[in-house]
Length: 390
Image 1: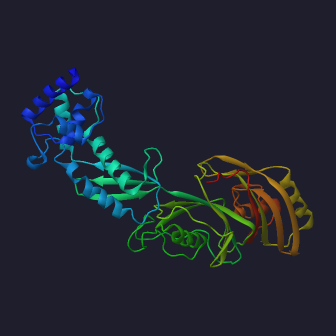
Image 2: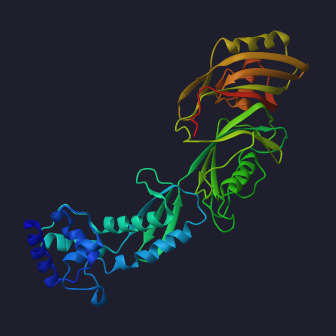
Image 3: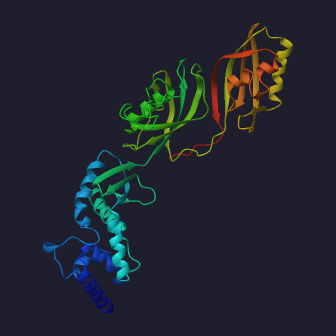
């Protein structure tokens, strides 16, 4: 009873100098009455005005009266998205927050919601009620950005992650795709917002396949190792991760194998997230080498020494990296031609290992013969760590 009387005094003092809507008034007195802020709470104490003679609210400029229109726009803009939960954020004019602070400071009102948070809460309640979805402030499926300055409503869908492997049995197909020259991969009208120039690569084929599955415009492929455009990828395939930006479809069922143009995708599945750090892996690779002069059999025996000591890579940043060779077999095809089959740590440039380079030892140095890598194919690629499942 005491709180009600003091609240009535407070309301009378505020309304004597300012026109305040029922939403804002309910918020201003909610802490004093230990109640949740609401329009009805403000209406109960706002004896000065009714809906018929409501003037422009000093604080919110009558934003709360526009929320039904905002929610209708949110429903329309999100109609093509699959979502289970959501979050609402808003941009309001600085004067609205300033006026809110003026009232709170002048009448010594503390511990209540600020006007922006109250707006977001009211929008969320209305949208939740109409769509039967849930509000999730920590991990929302979609996020709305309501801009009351220009009356726009943008929808952002949480990114998804996919893991899979690919095999490539066609040569002259590059791994990575050339980015759009106009936007440098950011996405524009010319590239249909994909960020890619075309789809004539492994990356392009993967991207094109996933665009359709998730109704997305952009994806980013993260590779486990790389290869030359003439290399074949055999065995169980090369692992890769993909980040799907702004997906409209969230639940996708994949076939065990998907045949694309010049390659196949295997074991595709959605995962919770992709690894932040690099993943160690090993590759079994077949290398075709040609030498400037005929290969000497006594020097070829030196190749077995590679298994006993690690390969040392001197990078340009003066960082030394050591990689291991776990198995190595060779076969002399012609006097100047050699086939090598080896199992090695990931992160070794095959061409650099063959030719004179920063890798020590390299074949050119070890065989005392200028060697050239003609071709290399991957028979097997194995990751050392496990992948989280969705």
